Length: 244
Image (tube, rainbow, N blue to C red; front, side, top):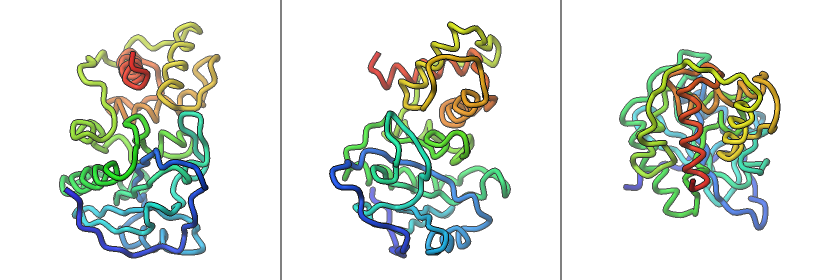
């Protein structure tokens, strides 16, 4: 079901780059004290940020930028070999104060509206499930949104994105630290879409990527560690992406 949408356009938009497909859907939280404050910023020419949609906590949806136009929501970002993701993505801001201002659970009405909106967008664009991601996935070194409280599993159950069904919870023991094991972790994260170098110890850059992965696919333990439970989920998602 397509949600009811009110138009309140932002000046922060421009033409999409010619020949670039719309093949990504990026979800954010607003990370501001109120919906009104967030919308004002997304429509402020001085801020130079915007999104295509904003979904309020009561399920109300605003369209700030038409999908055929480029909104400015992803910033410096990377996914599956591509940067400059604003040109190829639709961005949805989900009202929530975020980690800075009192991160809280997303209401059921809001989650239902996000799901309906995503399904509506997917009916218009060929966006593969592997490209339905969090802002933190595409910018793990600087973003946390929409965070570990967001219902990614429920979205996937309704046809939006990926979730590794049937992967057992193996806990937070058995942290991978050896070079060979970390090489495999890095390779699987790269298969999923993250920017990671193929070799190296568990450095801050890899920890940032692991936290981003955990916020999306293992919210029970956002540690930045390659523990047994995280490794199982990483391999499960990588197999879904690669068809293994």
